[in-house]
Image 1: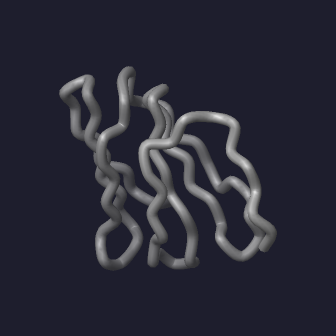
Image 2: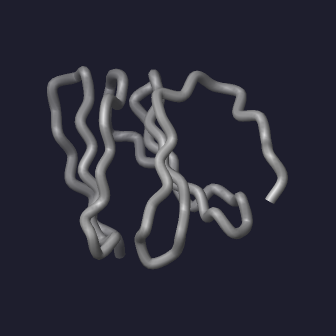
Image 3: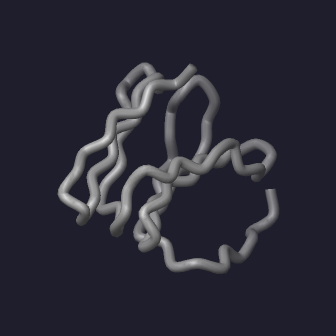
Amino acid sequence: MPIQKYPWNLLGVRYTYGLEPGLEHGSWYGSIKLWQLSTGKEICTLKEHVAVVNSLVFSPDGKTLVSCSSDKTIKIWQRD
């Protein structure tokens, strides 16, 4: 997969070991994006935080994502 420039400020990028290898990142805008590593395509954008996303962590089975934000909330996301 070629290297691509991402036009927004990222707070971090992490390799994930869910059901498919991928990348995740949080942003200054309160959104979380998940990417399929093999194709470079965006899988989804999660928009529930209203401030900076500080941390993201997947469960070992890759089915649950937990995010925390400067909006003083923790969100738990379940994979369908």
